[in-house]
Image (cartoon, rainbow, N blue to C red):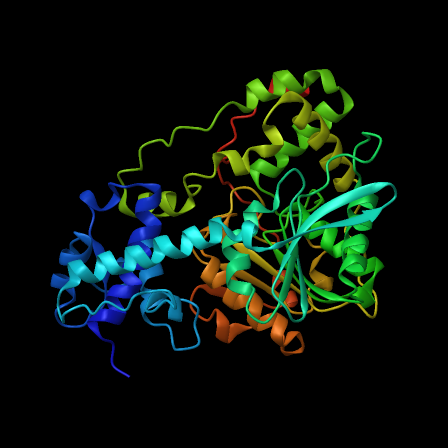
Length: 446
């Protein structure tokens, strides 16, 4: 099927929105490049997005242009072109006259705003339940009906990180999620054993013998532990941007190395928490993008999506929270990744090419457990479930629908690069800069 101006513009609009959320003036002096765009695309892009389109060879692409190219060349099964980008059940269906690309853009923006608002208010539409165990009541949320899917949150965070993804996964599933426990009934730090007990309690409250799992960041290690200890209780799991204990030879991010050192210091000396917060500092002001086109494109895609400060900095909201988080993370990372054993459920790892929180590649100890392989989201960050929920939902949904089939390549053929476990045996030594909550002052660990 030949590419139409509207399908090209849909891919361009997605890319434009993702980039300008991070740097509103990115395209003020930079073009968007594409090879062999449909005739009339330059006028459409200028009218709809106010951006100059340059027709060039692929060798001239920046990371931004490559992302556009992957999206425009997607087939009908790719999440880069889901129905939500061309229609919405709640849309009044206003017709756009042919060639009125400015009005087309307004309609796309309106649909995106409606979808975002629906996700933001998802918690109100879900059931609020309590799972009890060991004298503790765990409040969790649930919605939908069908096979049970648990969304496992990272330590120190709330289930708010899941709303855009949960909104897309709810049809045909029973989705449950909860805030990662911080303290037990007597105020003690809630350890890995407590997190696993919470998991058991929710399954019991739901009357379920097993479930699917999607786990993010440090929650991924908890999911691996749960699958290892309760293999019959996990049908399949996706480990999303997992952060794990790592050997010296493993790929690790600068953020993981620094955060691990700070948390170990604060866990051993809680009185250092206030000084550590000062070292961590506030949200960094984005530095100007590099003049070099290729570096600028990488840096703009690597920036943390705006408006997430309160959500992402929750473990660092005050000295008491940091002290508790430090004890939890240090205790968690003392547990090595469990060894592969017969009977483990299918595990799929999903990383991000521009993740500057967790290393994009899994540690060597985890690779034998990844029976379904590892996927790398191209041009994405640690927060893909918030920034590209339609892509993550399509990949996770395809895998969980048929985990025996292995990596769901058809569901992410353009925006995800897939690797088998055998291809993950070569460590990477990243040189990425520290992520937004840094810099971390070395004096904290002294």
